[in-house]
Amino acid sequence: MDNFILLTKDTGAIVGPIAKILGYVIDFIYDLLSKANIYNVGLAIILFTLLIKLCLLPLTIKQQKFSKMSAIMNPEIQAIQKKYNNKRDQDSMIKMQEETKAVYAKYGVSPSGSCLQLLIQMPILLALYRVIMKIPAYISQIKVYYEEIVAVVRANGLVGKVDEIYNADATMLKGFDVATTTELTAEQTNSVIDLLSTFTSEKWNQLVEVVTNAGGDATTVQAAIDHINDANSFLGINLAQTPSSAMGLALLIPVLAGVTQFLSVKISNATANQNNKKDENPMAGSMKMMTYMMPIMSVFFCFTFQAGIGLYWVIGAVYQIIFQLAVNLYFKKADMNAMIQKNVDKANKKRAKQGLPPQKIASNAQINTKYSEAVKEAQAKAQADSESKRKEEMKKSTDYYNKNVSKPGSLASKANMVQRYNEKNSKK
Image 1 (cartoon, rainbow, N blue to C red):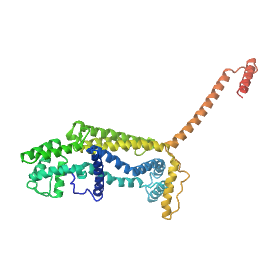
Image 2 (cartoon, rainbow, N blue to C red):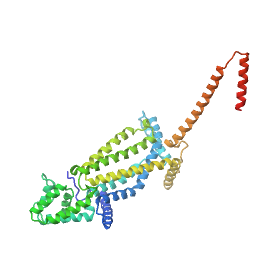
Image 3 (cartoon, rainbow, N blue to C red):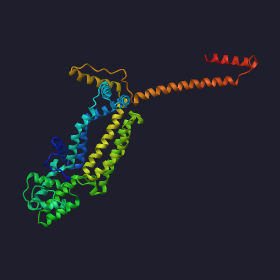
Image 4 (cartoon, helix red, strand yellow):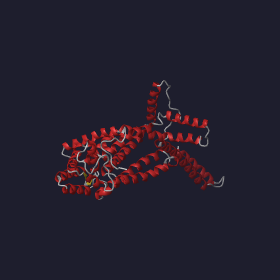
């Protein structure tokens, strides 16, 4: 399977147009940087990533709110599931669905809310990967250097040599005779650029040597290659190459991707575990596995993909860490009851448009997150401590007087009675 994407072909009816729009965005960012004499793909990717993340912020916040509401609702959902745990008849299943639906309605939350947000974000994320993996297709100031190389290759009938350098065992350029072609259509030119965009330093050197031996303009080719490498260089790492082939400093990309992804997942899972007791969270096992699987996958992908993808991965994870910490701080101070009421009011507006009666928050719709639970636990602990202290004082008092018990009617017993009377009145 070809591991490159033709510049002239869509990856889907939805992803293709979105990638085209995002391509205009990153091209605009790179153009702005060039006006400041900054020709750097790495910085363009960072700014591009942050801009897209900010654009997706409303959807991300909605997803976080849904997650918080889910944590609040989970005890009730689990109670319903437990209630019908061993009942598989149709009536019981219908009742369970109705009761579950009622819980969602009670909190003004749609069961499909989180899925809808993910469905909206998914094609955008896929388009992001396409744009970053195929920078020459979307940043015009970089593509022009590839076109200069293709012009020399075409003029000297070396298209087939490009194919051989890319993969000596198979022909990757389909649809035309690479051995004899000197004239290329726009689509064929883009196909050659796709191959050139994957070239390592070793393959670039081979291409220069081939052009030189053919008597072609090797100077123009070398100058274009230098411009491409300069643009792709970020902190000494060539973002157009894969860390697996470049090694050296490029290995920092997958390492950082793994570390940042681990921290991101760890913080997210810690938040979920705070909202649900660990033994009551049905997803606890999966979350624990994801804590380690996601970083491992990040390291693998960023090791085998272009370093530019790894840079995007790292910046995205750092952004997610900062965002999650900010969200946690916000929800820690937020009035969750007011948030539930706001959700219900919003849901009631939709119900009114449909001619349905408003949904009220049931009397048992109380916040049971860690925040209200912490207050309840603190109050219970204070009451228990007060009771314990009172019993301890009573015991000390009883022990004290028991030690001083004398024979009834004796002088000592009368003295003790006077002492107790004086102590009692002195306390008053």
